[in-house]
Image 1 (tube, one colour):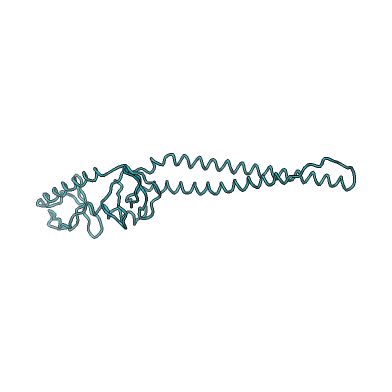
Image 2 (cartoon, rainbow, N blue to C red):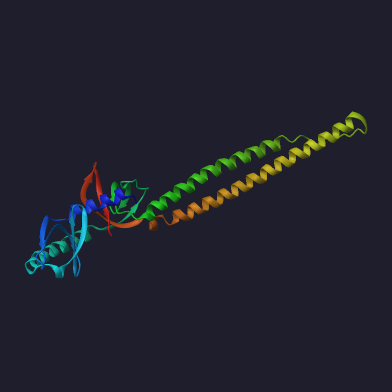
Length: 240
């Protein structure tokens, strides 16, 4: 997705998880002020001036460890709360650059701004749109060729049944026969072209049907509501 969408995703997560700025003290005597974001076994992440920094827990001063432990407990509570809200959702339409789309939740279809959408979902909807456009174009082409073939067939005159040898009538019969053959050939070729166009159309339709058969799997992700709104639309976050 676009960078601005990723930034919005970070912002939505920040509103849930970031705490107040804290001057972290290290065993070297230096300080580093930043907001606690998350932690792992031996490292923790803070945010400062819009940037994220990964720091080692072992570098912290001893009197900072109780404060970090409390933040870690709060983090676990937040994670547990988020886990309780996570559900399997289906992205129904192609999200715009800000994640605006419709999703199918366990309670129904709603409009949201979905953050952290996998790139594959946008690609899936783009492919569906592209195939549908090809179908529309090929349908119009096949209909045009079929109509032209029918008109050409209707334009084939009857074969002359009387032959008068010599003179004008003999020349007219030859001309008439040649014209009939030409029109029949034209009608036949147009019919072949129409058959070919309809065959190509069926292949594209089959390809689209196959793509849509995987719609549920391709567009299903685990996500949760952040509790925040943007222009009256609720923010939802795809679980990393």
